[in-house]
Length: 422
Image (cartoon, rainbow, N blue to C red; front, side):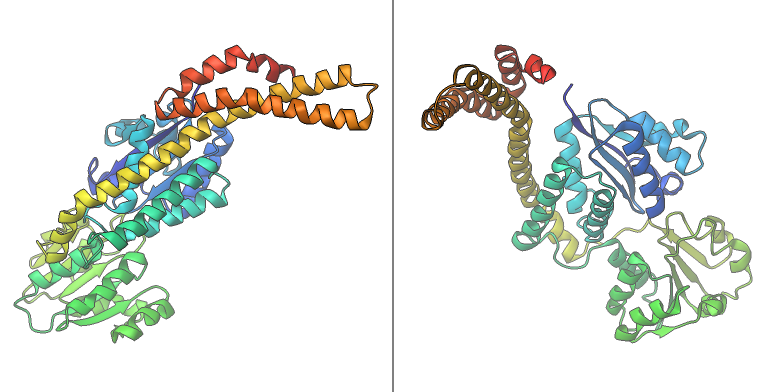
């Protein structure tokens, strides 16, 4: 049975944030699931991507393992009822469609903010994890390096990555819009992980804002704030800083809400207080909106305004898709060659076995010179015999008829029997 590349996807296109945060996986969880996939299903290729917008599993296997894998994810998240959430998962069982989906995700075509650069780095980390776990075989290695090369082409040849139309910049645009009537709005950024750091760097587009940063690890906050000229607030003074701020952007990893309605109710809010929750799982209770003057946005309802950068990216999509198409075609040609390689090797081994047996049978008493000559002649004959089926196999690849030709040659030369006897 042919091994197929498959994908399981739960994303902002199929599930709301409250479902995505239930399924979201950290690095340790990803490693544990990969280990189970390796042990339970003997996978040689598996990749898990988990971000605020998606949790996806890519794998190569003869069978559709989607339900079993979703159950593994559920067990890792402590969900005994994960089967009730199957409707939120998109299962991609077609090899070419799964490959195309991974390309589109990696380039940012499937991102909530089109062209978001962060997904490229997240995919690289996912690949590194798979490689470290020895779950990146020749197929996945070749596929990922083709994706990385394609990403470089898109950066060099298109305007798709021009400007700052990422999720982080969408947050800046939102803040700018809602604080347009506020003189020198006070902004507090809580958490400087990957998204938080990107938001901080984009704060330069709010030149009038007074920005403060706080983080559990203060040295990390100081590292980000220093070159940007922002003030660092000790994490134990976070509550006071929240009360003073007009805008609170929270990007902090926590299993339970960090900012609660009970906490916000204690604040004096003379006009308004904007909260932006960029965390998955969410770190701000949605009920804080019940408090007068409070405005709350999360990753699902942040939308970038029609900026020039975004327009350029949207206009570049056909060019990006064309480059992806070229890369996939090149990868598919390599994949077809890989598909026939085992048959070519079996055929070579089969003929070489016959040649060696016949040499042993008839050349027991010949001299060294004669043996060398006959060995050379029979090798040359074997290469000529191999030439036609090898050419036919490679031609069949281009016609998408490789499987039929593999079957014909296997039967014709009895390759299964020869391999079994060896």
